[in-house]
Picture 1: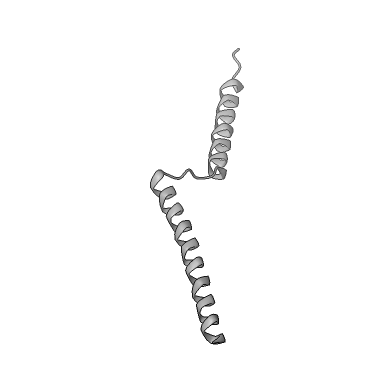
Picture 2: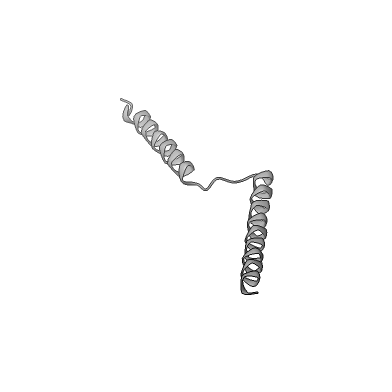
Amino acid sequence: MTDQTKHGIDFVQSSNKARMYEEKKKKEIPSYGLNELKISHDNHFLDGQMKMIKQELITMINEKGEK
């Protein structure tokens, strides 16, 4: 008589592995392409520039108010 449970065990194990792989895949941090990284860098650079310009304008306004 052959073991009938062997096939069932393999099926369950492969199903569990597939489910675990899908869960792991969902948890992974998405990898960004070069274009997305360039855009992110440009946005960060522009944010810094805008902050600097805003600070200069505040300084100029305060200086004119003192005169």
